[in-house]
Length: 349
Ligand code: ATP
Ligand code: MG
Image (tube, rainbow, N blue to C red):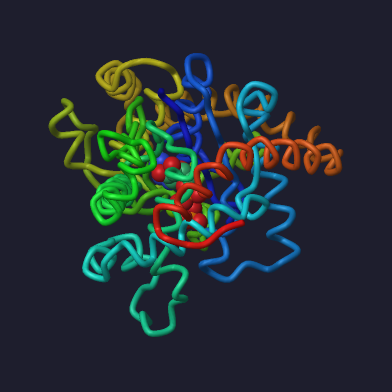
């Protein structure tokens, strides 16, 4: 049976990368699949979060899910910390995953930076918790951005090693094929699986990047969007790229063209054609593209922003939605984790 799970961290306001890289697919899959969408607050505290801001961010990310088109009646929408099975299963996976596996994770290296000794243990173990998020529901499909590919591979390795390590008990439990956890498939598709920073075409757009100018937030108003796109970094080349191959070698322009194509629902070639046909001489080569990009971004994000603001007026209602979703999530994860206890050899009453 196919089941979808994914989540976002309440580490700030969601941005265009989260939206185009993941959310668009979440909404699409909601039409055809049983979907579970989580606000992963346990993950958020792997780097320091101000408690008051965290609480607000959890509600705002929830509002952003709904405003973007997730239906909390249809899909399960909840926050991770209300379902204890995530943390419990993550502990088991801490004991299944190997240090060597985690040592290869590039996200840890990037987020820990140079001062690795001072990174939290949680940041290091992050991928194990992510594997638990997915496998606690035996989710088969995980729509994420390109940056999460490596973590998904780790989740598959953990599922496989768990199935091997506890094979006898798993078969005894009635899983004749020995598959207790099906290895989950990443769903990394769509027109923009990796949106880059507006300030640096080699870095991905991120919530946790200090410069707000690097990203377009779902909460940005029309003026902020226009300003950020206007000031988005381009490059020093005297002319626009003539074809897709040349475009690929110019990350900042490539990013703007890619975002435009994704938002306008056209091919990258068509977006590049627009750039070329509107290109002007001199330092403002990209004004035409930037203007068109601003227009589609404002048209797409404006209604979402208005809906987030409306939903945030009633935080009690958001909390009710999360409580309801958490209950439904627990109804799935609870029985699966109870079986994990049996398989691992814990005594339970
Ligand atoms: P943080 O900087 O705190 O890690 P983030 O912006 O990376 O925040 P996450 O909550 O870690 O966001 O990721 C949520 C989802 O958004 C994941 O599926 C991730 O792959 C996707 N995603 C994040 N950034 C991008 C991006 N720049 N382009 C495409 N997808 C992205
Ligand atoms: Mg991230």
